Image (cartoon, rainbow, N blue to C red; front, side, top):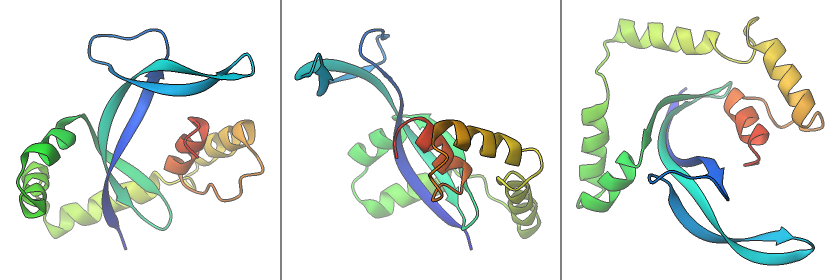
Length: 144
């Protein structure tokens, strides 16, 4: 069984370098043994994901488009209609082909497994709970 999820990501964060498209916020960080407040710059994205017992797969990543829709659409029904309008319609054959491709991209594929094992070992070999590629990315980037 597959599930569909929409989540917010902030994969690009900096305390120094930034462009005019970066958002900014004040955060507390440790510096010289003290907590200090600094400005943090970041890009915010919305990711549409397909979730499965075996893997998670990002289907689309868009900067702020979804957040803007959430803020401007009147209710959840309108938001769901907006999401549906942006999805490519698929017949049963296309859905089956799509699912087969996703399954081949899982961490158990011969191409992905060595990368997955090597990366997990480099980041934190004790984390036996990391079993999907997306969780590995989250671990690597410090989100879990």
